[in-house]
Amino acid sequence: MKREAHMSDSDAPHHAIVIGAGLGGLAAAMRLGAKGYCVSVVDRLDRPGGRGSSITQGGHRFDLGPTIVTVPQGLRELWAACGRDFDRDVTLKPMTPFYEIRWPDGSSFAAVQDDDAMEAEVARLSPDDLAGYRKFLKDAKARYWFGYEDLGRRPMHQLWDLIKALPRFVWLRADRSVYAHAAARVRDPRLRFALSFHPLFIGGDPFNVTSMYILVSHLEKSFGVHYAMGGVQAIADAMANVVRAQGGTVALNTEIDEIIIQDGRAAGVRLRGGRVMHADIVVSNADAGHTYTRLLRNQPRKRWTDAKLKRSRWSMGLFVWYFGTRGTRNMWRDVGHHTILVGPRYRDHIKDIFIRGHLSDDMSLYVHRPSVTDPSVAPAGDDTFYVLSPVPHLGHDNSVDWTTRQDPYRRKMLAMLEQRLLPGLSDHITESLVFTPETFRDRYLSPLGAGFSIEPRILQSAWFRPHNISEEVPGLYLAGAGTHPGAGLPGVISSAEVLAQVVPDPAPSMALPVAAE
Figure 1 (cartoon, rainbow, N blue to C red):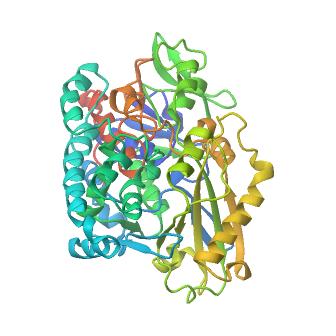
Figure 2: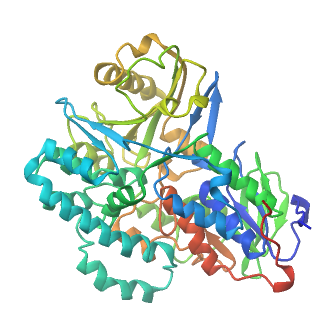
Figure 3: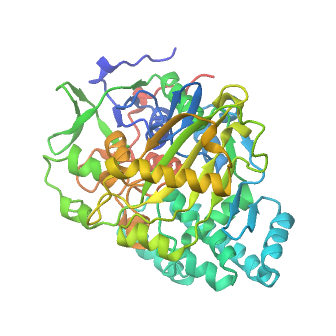
């Protein structure tokens, strides 16, 4: 018989509270439920998924955050740990091509999984770089096995774990940036972009983030790029359903104000309004910065002090324009599911975003058109779009005032789209919604409005990142983008796998059955 758990059961033995129903928090709840905990997930939004949730407006479903699945086996393993079959709950559709990159000179590059087709694309742009491209893929594979399958799937909270890994880091030239590694293998500037831009998907500066992240090229080659029918929201909804089937609860529209400390350990949470929920362990899927500066504001901290977090380098902000168009399903036939429009500058533009904190006049855009794959995102004959531009976070000197800059910036984005990708777009727009770094700060409680928490530089990764088992308070654990191994859908799912290795098992007498199909 399935055990029922309710918010009123907050004093039950072996009870876990998960702060935040983001993908990392939901994955953590699933792992804890499989271990035998009675789990209560609490989130301030009206839908599960956090940054992977959605908003429906005028018949258009806008997926707000991640748009692709690159390591589907991570999700399948998560479901299997709960006694379930991921593919019965969620339908993944492989993308071909993964995305198309378009440069201002009219040249393009289509990324696909087939080896021969990819080599043909490389040779079409720069035949002399084919041998270097093959070397780059070998490099990416080596970093995948060490960085993802090894370090990314085990705890890194002990300094000795880092020390043991240092020789391998040195051998793999982890001191070199992603861009520098690409530049060492290929000469064509377009291929250097195509092989180095991926850190932007997890909030990293390609010219400063460790070359370990070239492993993404191996992920794409080996496992492909997939779209979840129904969007990432469908994954989040399915995760919440597993938690409920395990006997847990998912409370939405409920904000946690503080983590309660009793006898020197995390003992529950206080909601806005004053209600207290007790628990044996607390898992925070809130941003690590918010967890330490806000939720533990009354607790002395030794490592993650306000001053240390202020000194940390944070990922860039995001300007995202979600819009719907009427009668366009058969227009722009050369525009697929994912398109990257590259601006006139690369290195200097990245420096504006990450170092100078300057909002550039030019931009590079990530264009998501899910309606070519999933008709459910828009009314019949219409399209749903999501266009993203990396911008500075709010922590720089003279930070951008988005209350005055939002509309001018959106108009620049529209002009670029009409000129280079979607001619006549302005005549067809119906619904429109804009997220700026200020939205990320207010909606997701993200420090400085950063899109991906702390930037994944080498001295802010692994042991140097906030640990999955809190350094500050016993009984507190972290999951999600701000902890190990980092941001991105594979990263936050892996954070829950790591979490399950450091959270103690409940007493055998309290073990709960896995979720029934």
